[in-house]
Image 1: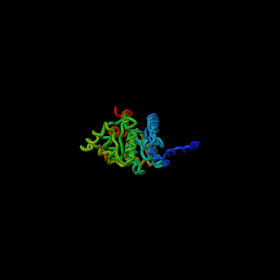
Image 2 (image 1 turned 90 degrees about the vertical axis):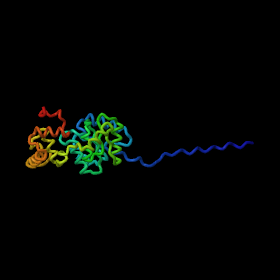
Image 3 (image 1 turned 60 degrees about the horizontal axis):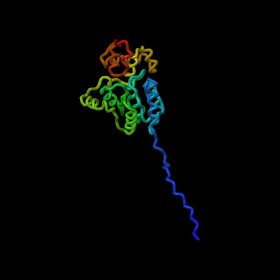
Image 4 (image 1 turned 30 degrees about the vertical axis):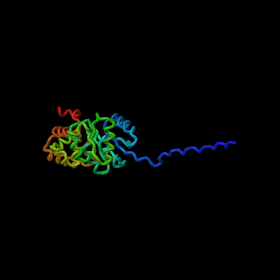
Length: 241
């Protein structure tokens, strides 16, 4: 009489790794155009390793949010009201040295790249680049390296080798750079004082100091200079003509 068949034991299931997922790269988006911020946010949130933790519409707000949120990476536009991306980058790296800044700009001029990298930015991506380029820039910056859009990388290296930088702008103090932008935006001393939470006399002192350093002694000249260094957008300034 045949022995009854033994019930076969089920094969052991392959267990998935139960360890925690690696932390995502926390990212702050800074651009004065809401549509651009929202579009970039949607694209980045499709990446498993990147988390957008906030949005800012100007450089001053960005500095405040970095102090509160301590993001790993800031994706920063250049031309913004009240405080441009260049000066915001300098201030962010002073208050949060471990935060990395990636510039996202429409400007393809290699001089911009050399200037922002001199300030400490860890990346420069053109707005016409792909999502893959921006995501790679964020990952590269977070890893401690520098990313530059391939389309301008060679020009940037050439400009750096020949020393084509705007040296005068780097000699301005942080407060002088802020006053310069507000002057170029048409703000009176009283308005600038209110924006910066300082006295009118202090604004006047900074104004005189930057005029002396730049050897520019009228508002029209300061405005042209601010446009030339990317402090403000030229199309918004009727004084240029």
